[in-house]
Amino acid sequence: MRDLKYLAAYLVPVSAMIGLYAREGWSWLTLILVFGILPAVELFMPKSTENVPETEEDERSKRWLFDVLLYLNAPLLFGITGWYLWVLTFQHLSWAETLGLTLATGIVAGANGINVAHELGHRTHKGEQWLAQLMLIPTLYQHFFVEHNRGHHKNVATDADPASARRGEWVFAFWLRSITGGWQNAWKLEKERLANSGHQTLRWENAMLRYVICQAFWLLGITYFFGLKGFLGSLGVALIGVLLLETVNYIEHYGLRRAILPSGRPEPVSPRHSWNSDHELGRIFLYELTRHSDHHYKATRKYQVLRHLNESPQLPFGYPASIVMSLLPPVWFRVMDGRIHREEPFYH
Image (cartoon, rainbow, N blue to C red; front, side, top):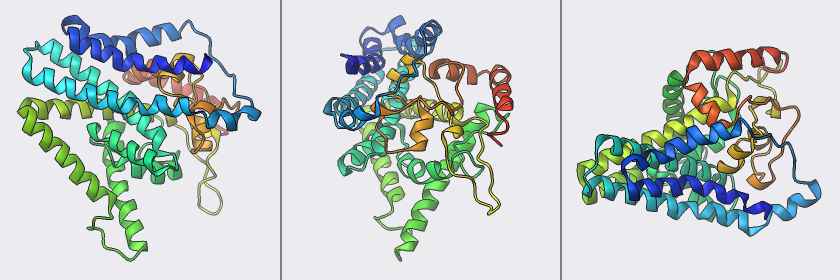
């Protein structure tokens, strides 16, 4: 029964479906759930530092239920996106309903789309990697598969990584730097990979070229079936999903830096280079993404066996509350910069 707790993650897409069906004030249900109810409840819930016993990790990693829980997000993601586009195009909506439903669908695209694609993208099975890339289409962010796995995990907590926020950097400036830098790095990584094989950049083997074509067909198909409204709505959904991802990136590594060794190379990545959160609800709703320190320590470890590590820096609040706080930079700096300062010997 303990394993079924991850069913709660489906409350996000379910809330979006309720909004699409009932509309009116219900259009805002997902936003209220994720950034109102969850942070409020987490304030009164204890954190859990319990880890799966090492003797059970291997068996738990192979349990099919945890994989199925991830796979089911794919039909939910595309079903909700299609439903949103239909409602937006063929139903009369007020501006408040349009905004609420766009935000709701964008949150689903980020939390149940990009986040699940992130987990699957670290798997070694080709089918799961393919599914990960497929689930990145609604946010037009397929390059994340290249940059995150081959760029971010290598350069995390250094100035070479656009997805590692600097101390004192406003989240709004970080959005621009991370989005543009991630796109540029993904092209650079593919160019280098092909050059090492003796190939030119502009060929079908270039994943970035395939992503551009695939995402262009996605938008063309939406425009054909749903017109200008659908096209603009799909861009809105993608933008919300991407900004949710990048805000999560912001809080995961804010202000943390790997020391530079005498060789000029950064020290190895350790649990000290990612902010961790053991707040139970955020862990469940994001498939343990909040145990981010262990994820960077061993990226192939499946979400159901990610561990609390004593040496990792701890966020004072769960991810939902931290996201809200990051959008208020003076508050964020006041809370977080002092925590970095106290750990200064480790994070310079």
